[in-house]
Amino acid sequence: MRNLRAARACLKHDLRRMLFTPRILAVLLLTGLFIQNLVKPIGWYLTDAGVSINAPGLLSYLFSDCFFTLVSLMGLLLLLCDAPFYDETQQYVLLRCGRKTWGLGQVAYAFCATFIYLLLQCGLAQLFLAGRLDYGALWGQGMEGIVVGMEYQNYDIMIDLDPMIYS
Image (cartoon, rainbow, N blue to C red; front, side, top):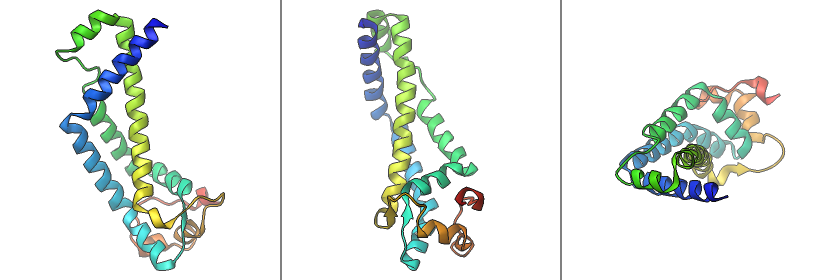
């Protein structure tokens, strides 16, 4: 139990340190611009057609796109590129909690940072399409028009939309 408490303290220290690095601001800015550029044509179609899109369906299409996945992994790589952190404070943290507990805290940091980044991507995609989202059980009329009606060609939607996923 003591090890978990100390690992949680290491995790909190790493997350606090992560918030104040300029690299994080760059990742946030680039991720936001990329997602906005990706979902902007979808928003144009939804506004023109007057329909809504299912939020989980949109996210499934976003994360099934190879280019989106590649850019997401590059952002995640930027987040985790210097983990495990070893700065002037880490030697004291390492002495106080031990190697195993410190390593457990670093692994927990990698999991938490990845989860936070995933939530950020989902939140930004939903934020940019805020007035046009539907949370029903079906795909929504917007997704049907984009995929089956081939509207992704007219609006230059960059997401690779496979009709097999829709059916």
